[in-house]
Image (cartoon, rainbow, N blue to C red; front, side, top):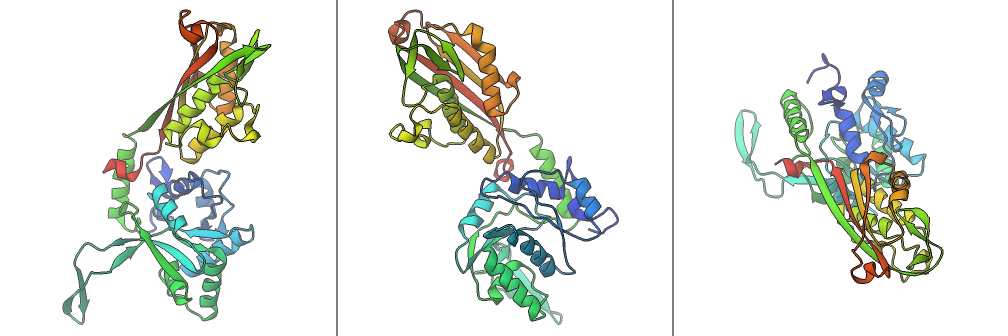
Length: 380
């Protein structure tokens, strides 16, 4: 692409650099714990200006004169902090999906690396000494990144290659093959293309422009009910309210937070509160329900979700919810680490009908709205 506009990984793609887009793909994945970027020794300032710091991002390390030496420097850095597995990825592939990252991680095993690849669909021609011939495409693949390995194995392979003065490997799978590490092919993704020339960059810009016009908004719903028994207070939406009864349940029986937990789990298809915190487990006996809601929030965050709205309706004859509404909203916002304006708490009676009307129990309905990054499959 030329250097007149600067290295391609630091160029703006939409509102973020190409490198930042790539980092974001990994930082939002729950199985990725640390991200190590390797940069050219003269590009530290460009890096600092192009990247937003986050908890998973380690300080950059300087690369070498070849791709192999740069990879070796990055792997040595993460080896020092005790990483056991590594994914090696091209900074210029900013559209890697969470699904592809997951497939690659699952493909790693002892003595076996994981290589995402796509079967070649086009007819392959070879030109040699002016003569054109057709190359059979059966069993032919285009290799992608991230490529995954057990860190100690691929680092040892890289160091052996350097010791043997071999520097012309085009990817890490080739180094692994040379060192006797078997390679497990996993399904690649044609949208995970590498920005190499101006045409690729223009395609990436069109994709980013389209992504900005599409939103992946998911809504989950939750319902919970618990019986009332004699007591001195009830816990609703994280607030302890004086009352002549209390809610009966394995935990603190906070129907509001339980309903919200199920609603959030619903946005990522993660089952219900009972599958994560079974009432048969004494560990959760009398547990405060903010633990459950925090767990659901973390699962949503790990999936790349942003909570945009939480809405809960408490159904009871007593106690009165109105005097405690703002405290409930504030407590939910604190647990979920969102603005209070994104939390709604409402209440209604059951018009003295049924078990709720007879003050035998309290129920709650909840809705959660979460925004997720748009996947490449969604824009096809």
